[in-house]
Length: 477
Ligand SMILES: [Zn+2]
Image 1 (cartoon, rainbow, N blue to C red):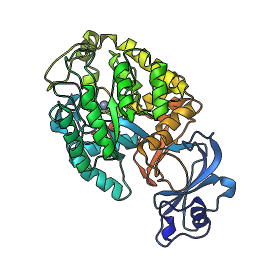
Image 2 (image 1 turned 45 degrees about the vertical axis):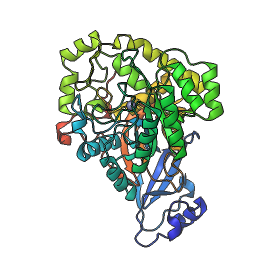
Image 3 (image 1 turned 135 degrees about the horizontal axis):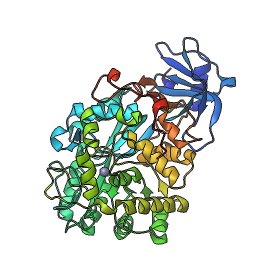
Image 4 (image 1 turned 90 degrees about the vertical axis):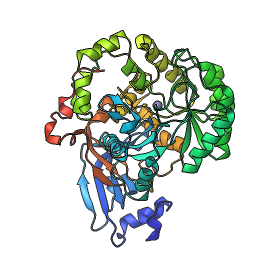
């Protein structure tokens, strides 16, 4: 039954599903479920999904289901299923409670984050330029079999300009010249990165240097020679335009200094440049002295007790009111975020314009660093996409099949025969209210269920945590 491998036609897979199971195959049928397949097609009620050896073997109406002998059936009456979320912009392994430091990055800490992502239904993450080399071992193991935590795409160590903004302090080796940029790209390519990340920003004119266009051009050219896409951190409209001219493949943040204009969006459409991650949820956290979800069990279950007490402290509130303070370990300190409220609005307006104009858009949060929470922020991001004018169906598509298209990964991102069975099962309908993506009933990665956020708690036994979906914060945010 070798044709069960990925790449087999849907017809062949269907034939397998309705006739007999291959010897030793493990098949599970999810029955009576409403399928939101991630492609943008309307929801299909009264559906079934047949999962064999971790892949989707068949999906269709209950009336046409012919469950193979020996299959396990799970009745999901009343429930909804969508593809596992793909977060196109994260960082992993860098935090201990609310302290960010390269010294915390190790395999155990990365895997703890990947499990937290999975618990929130985020089944794939793209890490944007702050990985140590152990990520390649982790990725190899995840790709070798059927993972029990989020899948990983990595850009290794992204390119930070000498003396400039970006990266994880103590990890990224800065580049100052086109030659150094080419060498850095070659080094990352040799390690087997999935893409190249560059930072072009000056932290709102707080740092007197910014990656030059010569350096970004060299990095992009060298990456393209090696068939690697380039994802850029941007802030300014003018930089975004120049990077598009240079052939950058995607933006990891949306332009936030001013309105995006027709020239930028026309160029992006003509060149196929992606707004692959808009990080709206990143912008909003900076503007909040008190996080409105601070007591919501959907949030508290996913962060460490140390994080909780730091976030609840009056000192933090005061610090945010005064303007955020940079993390220890950086070579400078600043208090700057006083106008973040404006930035959030600018980010959302620009996202709306991009979507309306038809620029390719994915979903990404920039979660992982201090104040942006693995998994949790993906659900916030979906909400903000809807607040910026998308339908819930479109928001879900952006975080699933669109992100898979950005990654160039044909094995994930939709509920279709032949794909990995990476699934998020919900009690309530996310198309009726996007916040219902939080009503997580089960998460499957490669056909196996993993503990959900309602079954686990970060860094403590699940018995130490209280609260269910029914106990969520009554305040809409
Ligand atoms: Zn980032």
